[in-house]
Amino acid sequence: MPNKETFVEHLTRQGISRRSFIKFCALTASSLALPTGAARVIAETLATTPRPSVIWLSSQECTGCSETVLRSFEPTLESLILSEISLDYHNTLMAPSGAAAEDARRQAIAAGGHVLVVDGSITLTQQGTWSIIAGEATLDIIQESADGAALIIAIGNCAAFGGLPRAHPNPSDAHGVDSIIASGDLVTNAPVINVPGCPPIPEVMTGVIVHFLTFGVPELDALNRPTVFYGQTVHDTCARLPHFEAGNFAQSFDDEGARQGFCLLDLGCKGPVTFNACSSTHWNGATSYPMHSGHGCLGCSEPDFWDRPGGFYTPLF
Ligand code: SF4
Ligand code: F3S
Image 1 (spheres, protein in one colour):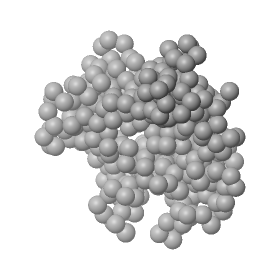
Image 2: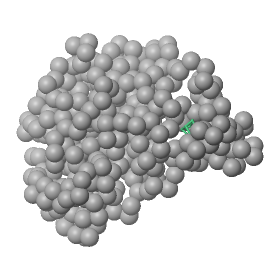
Image 3: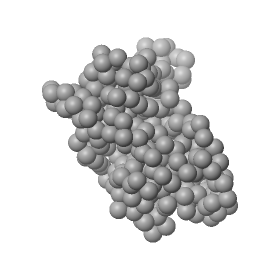
């Protein structure tokens, strides 16, 4: 049966303190760029709303998107993410297996109003990796799980845009969720939110779920990405931007310019054309992000980034 426990009831049962909960709400409101007072609205909503049932389906993927959610920072944030939802089905993380696992998924579908998370690209050939799971076509499992869903989240570049499996020559005919809806292979009325990245930033996933629970579907861009996280390029808030504007460009990853924090454009950085929150939200508990660590952006939140002409190290311009 779907879990009707509220977020706060679950936290209490898990021994997570009220202080951690309030801090989580404040951090989430801040990451969503919400006005003063929003943290209180989030806290009140989560305190009284039953945790949504989540069915997380893995298709052609590397499990990096599950890893990123599990490795989110803050001593308690990982527990909070898993407390915020009732994760009723996940190919990797759930304890039951076999018929018991499938029963859990079908019970969540029967209750309706669940959140379907799709992780990985979907093959339409029936020949690719993950085209068949437990004797059923993956596409059929996704269709069955999408019926009655309140929301579909396509997590990671693969589920959003096809990702690595879709790279030329795309031997498995891999597609993202939007693509199979557009082709009519998946029929659903549920809104789709894309959370791309390879992998995506875990706090973005948290923010999307909390926004949906509290305020509904967030504003999306033309690629169905939440504008609050994907409305700016990583270049716009990069720490190396002053050097870009001053014309200071590193010519190798270990030259004096690189050591001084010069811009990595000549080393292939795709930051100016990549919309994501890496340089504003940061990774690993706001410790760092690729350009901060000395490597250019590969453009991992954009469609077809694996096939960008010239590869990862050819300058954009
Ligand atoms: Fe922009 Fe990349 Fe240079 Fe940062 S390193 S300023 S993202 S081009
Ligand atoms: Fe991906 Fe570029 Fe961020 S490679 S992790 S979008 S800096």
